[in-house]
Length: 110
Image 1 (cartoon, rainbow, N blue to C red):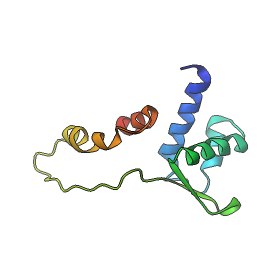
Image 2 (cartoon, rainbow, N blue to C red):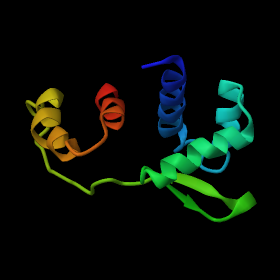
Image 3 (cartoon, rainbow, N blue to C red):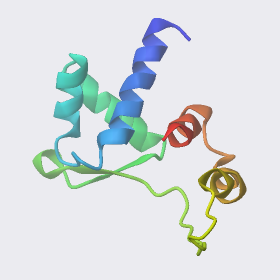
Image 4 (cartoon, one colour):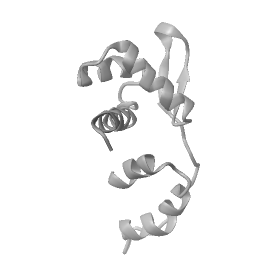
């Protein structure tokens, strides 16, 4: 991975990790954090929208961004003896097999 690809991946990961806290101003937050123009930040957002990872609602000044649910899933688990790594391996990871590797890595890291 070259330097440009690494920075792109860092920006994309930052957006996905922070979009929930900044749905209306994420492009400004990204611009400040990475020292890029708002237009460049907007291009990253548009790419995430076109990749199906982010939803854009509203227009221009009222635009808000949200992460797109990839899968809706629920499971009831007993708290007694709960093993998080086992839940991840048996229930969550299989649902993510079709994700791009970089997206999978973001979820796995958290």
